[in-house]
Every structure is written in C-alpha cells, then in structure tokens.
Image (cartoon, rainbow, N blue to C red; front, side):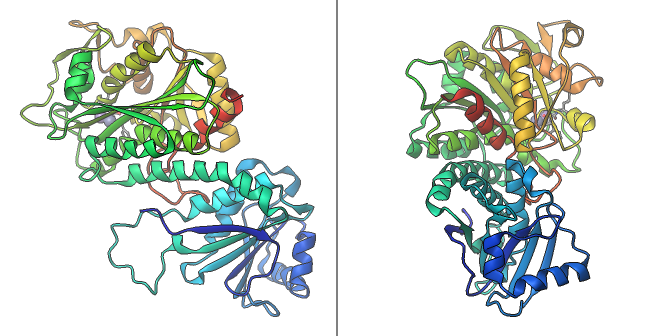
Amino acid sequence: MPDAFKLGFAPFALPARGVLIVFCNDGLQLGPATRDLLGNAAQMVRKAATTERFKGKLGSTLDIVLPAGLQATRLVVVGCGQSSELKSSDYLRLGGVAMGKVPAAAGDAMILAELPNGAMKPEHAADLALGARLRVYAFDQYKTKQTDDEPKPGSAHVTVGVSEPGATRKAWADREALADGVVLARDLVNEPANILFPEEFARRAMGLRKLGVAVEVLDVPAMKKLGMNALLGVGQGSAHESRVVIMRWNGGKRGEKPVAFIGKGVCFDTGGISIKPAQSMEDMKGDMAGAACVVGLMQALAQRKAAVNAVGAIGLVENMPSGNAQRPGDIVKTMSGQTIEIINTDAEGRLVLADVLHYVADRFAPKFMIDLATLTGAIIVSLGQEYAGLFSNDDKLAERLTKCGERTGERVWRMPLGPEYDKMIDSKFADMKNTGGRFGGSITAAQLLQRFVGKTHWAHLDIAGTAMGSPQTDINKSWGSGWGVRLLDRLVSDYYEH
Ligand code: BES
Ligand code: MN
Ligand code: ZN
C-alpha cells in the first residue's frame, strides 16, 4: 500500500539526470553552493525570472526546461520570499512545492536544501523532506489501469542535497515517523467502508504492536459487561460488530500519568433510522477520521520513541438502519450511569464518545484527554475548512493547542461552552437528549461530551471540516488529510516530553 517514494540525503551536487530544484529569495539570490554548482546556468535564472516575471515569492516557482550546460532535464527555482523569516511549516511547504514540480515521468529529482544565506539547518532540511513526503502521497491502489511505463507520482527517487547528511538523517528519523503516522491516518480515512469496518480497523490498529504499542481490543461481550450501551446502541443496526481499541505507548517515566487521545471511529455514517440524504453520503466513509488520527499519532509517537506515556482509545462502529437499529425515542444507559434519550440517530458520534471518554477518564486518570471527531456539520458552517473547532474545560490546554496549531498550520479556533448551552440538551425522559436543536449545533454536541469527562482536563476537536475534502495544500493532495497527527505530535513534543 505505501507508495514507493525513495528519499535520500547527500552532499550538494549536480544530478546526472532528472529535475534539479534550487531555492532563491525575493531578491532572486541563490545560495553560495548553488551558485557554484550552477556556474553559467545561474545567469539563466535571472534572465528567465525577468521574462517570466518571477519574483521569488514564497511558494512560487520558475521552470527552465533543458537548462543549457546542465545534465538535468529541468531546473526549477522555488521562491522562498524573505528567507530569514521561515518557520518550520514554511520548510514543509517548500518541500511540498518542490515535489509538485517533479512529474511522474521525471523519475529522479535533486533538491538543493540551501537558502541565499547558506545551507538549511539539518532540522529544516528534514522539515523540507517531510513536506516532500506528504506531497507525493496518493491513495491509488484501487486504480487498476496504471501501466509500468507510467510510473506513479509517488515512485520518484528524491535526493535532498544538504551540508550535513549525517545530522540531517538523524533529524529525518523523527520526521519520517511523523510522516508514516500521517500517511497511515490518510490511508484509513480514504479506505472505503466495505473494506474498513470496525473489525478490520481494529486489525490495522494491531499493526502498531510491532512498534511496541500495547493494543487491546474490546469486543461486544466485553463492552456489554462494561455497560457501554450508548456506543453499542449506535452499532446495533449494523451487520458488522462494534469494537473499542485501546493503544498504550509507555515511553515516559514509569508510573507517570499518561496523556490520552480519543477518536470517533464511525466507519460509515448513514445516519441510521434518521437517515441522511443521498447527496454526498459517500463522504461518510471518512466519519472515522478522529480514530484514524489517533492511530496515526500513536504510530508516530512509538516509531520516534517519544518520551511520554500515551493512551489512544477509539470507538469503532457502523451507523446503519435495519430491523435491529436504534430508534428515535430510545433511551440508553451509558457506562457512566447517565441516561441519554435518542432524538436523532444521526447524532451518533457523541454517543460513541460518551462511553469511550468515560472509560478512559475512569481507567487511566490521564493528565488530560483530547478527543477528535468529525462530529457536526455545524462546525463547517461556523469555521469552514481552515480551522477545527476547539472546545475545552482547561484554558492552559486550549492555549497550548492553539499555539501548536499556529506552529504546524493545523489550526484550531476556540468555541464556547457554558451552562446555558448545557441546558439545551436536558431531556423530558432521561438525563439528557442527544441533540440540542438547530442553534449552536457544535456547541451542544460538545456539551454532551463534557458530561462524560468528569474532572479530567479535556479538549474536544471537531474536525468535520478539516479531516476530509478540505482545500488542497502544497503538502496535501489527498481527500483524507490526516489532520491532527502533526498538531498533536507537536503538542506532545513541545510540552509533555522531558
Ligand atoms: N458525521 C456527521 C457530521 C458530519 C457532517 C461530518 C458532514 C462531516 C461532514 C455527524 O454524525 C452528524 O450526522 N451530525 C449531525 C448532527 C445532527 C443530527 C444534530 C449533523 O451535523 O447534521
Ligand atoms: Mn451522524
Ligand atoms: Zn457521524
């Protein structure tokens, strides 16, 4: 399944074929090593820039086909704007832009990781490589018509020219783990629901065992025994059994409280008896993106041997209408003991999360827990597809998530919680109902979740807008974006590793 992307680091050199990619700033300056290597060809860059009105703006490109005096078939100049002001996410973007200029047929590419003021630092060159890796991702294994003489975009052999290959390879090891986590999350989101149902999802999560992650799977009898009736109610209409998967990575101090991540894993959401309209229903194969992110994150943490104790827990169900499906008006008793009246069977994600959140808080007493869920269409109405909705009972955690959002480009926007909203889900017949009406739909959903976290520090990320079908970027051309893996890996590395 992984695309055949080959990446290496080597000292600066000219390639014998393929595409050569170099960087310049908004003064059209190249780096010293780049200038030396290009020799007379460097003059060509200035001339071509004038003809093409290329200004070296961050992310813009200039193409020179069959550059005279070089063996490369194409010289691409990528602008990096004010090169002294680049952030880590800009290096990812530059890597993505560079890879975008390597057509499938080119085969090989050499990227000279140098800015006008000199070689990129090893960690920046590694960031660039991460951007390149994420850019070439393609979910194309169900396309049967590709032939051998038409190589896949992911089959390029890319060399990143650097000043310190050894140090860069070291820095790359952590980024490679992160890339593998994002790729795993994307694959899971893109996979159709006839292939990826709860049991199969659980099997794929078990693949993390080879990295030293302890993976425990709760089947239906185990969940019945625990009293997870809200989760089981959602899954009861499906021919596929529900599962909960608990993943534990213990890279931190012995006995130190874990950080915890919880994901909504609705492998397909028809809406159930409150069935959805046909239009775009196929997108609901991605309603497990929260769970996919958690698995991808656990992969990244384990593979880079993060110095943290982390728990990942995902609730896997399929929401289907059938003779055995849950009805509007049904009342379920959750594992926490609280009861929920089902008003709309399409508000199923919160039911799944109610039991998993309680289970994690109760069993692990984590430092904090963060859940991710493609929870509401309303969050797309509020924030569009650029920011995920953030809800939290903890200002410090919310602030850290917001900062990491800015650092990684996976941005979050805090939304309110409060007793006035909480009242909107009080029920005539049970402790609460699963919908709060048309107004503030994302908020009332979050209020329901909050009723299951107790005193645990908690944040909820509504990723309905960002996890699938979000606008394409220089580092993501995939429908399933793998959103959240980079954000949460950064949260862990910036604040919870020692
Ligand atoms: N999975 C959907 C939310 C969703 C919608 C995600 C569109 C991505 C794109 C969720 O289970 C759902 O159906 N929510 C309902 C809640 C309503 C019934 C209260 C919604 O948003 O309409
Ligand atoms: Mn739904
Ligand atoms: Zn859903």
